[in-house]
Length: 388
Image (cartoon, rainbow, N blue to C red):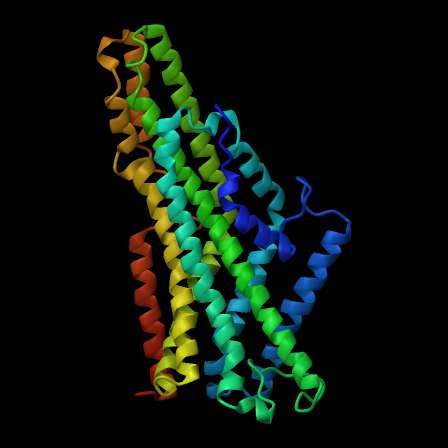
């Protein structure tokens, strides 16, 4: 049977990472070459410079509340994007090794039934990718259209307020800065979508491997009633389970810090977006922009929590692996095989939970708490800003 390529499912994701300079060709990561230079130029010219200009603008305004409401959520997302890029680039070698291991024999579907079993989950990931990608890019487009649609471009209004060491209220500097800001925001959007969806894909693969393991366990002893073959197949399943545990632990170590920062900034960004919705007139472009940013922030946290919750459900909390082992043809096997099976069933009940330094777990319960925190932040901002 032809080898199943897990990475092909996320090829669109990989292409996006390669375009923005986050996916070097070498398995060893970044080297002293043109691609590394391209990455450095993109990050510094499109991200770092814009962040610095916005920070200086906020400081120069003496932390004016109106200005903070309008641009701070974008600034937070850019800072989050820089943090994600740093963590991603630092761990790129490990990420590539994980994806390489994923295409190894131990993680391969064993038959057509298992290939059909994993297809709905893979299609679900692609659907989530589209649900995340298109609203994000729509938000980028809307931010660029606001000065045009409301006519503020005639007064040389930029999409994002920022300080520059030159006069932006004359041509061609206005057009150059306008284009730079839009390219910068597009770069940020592709970065956020690509990194977040690759993280979701890693969690999805953990869940899929649990599905394959359960299928293998259910079929133990039915294809061949020879006790020796049962024991060998059971040991192969145990090794598969251990590989799943190792894979999930490495994934967890890669994303722990990113998840911690992501949840805090997403909650604060969503609160600022809610404040913007309450601050500006309904159906205004700023209102619509705040609505889109709120949606994107919620999609980010939902994506992490949903796929993390799927890992927990499939791997341990519901006992699916243990029950699948119980469904095998164990009654006709040798005492030694039964003993191995019993030990494995007990071991399989140990939870696999994706966490952020064990402070909180990626689950739907955590997502509910994030929404509650968002509302608390919004209430605090509303009281501070005097919005009814």
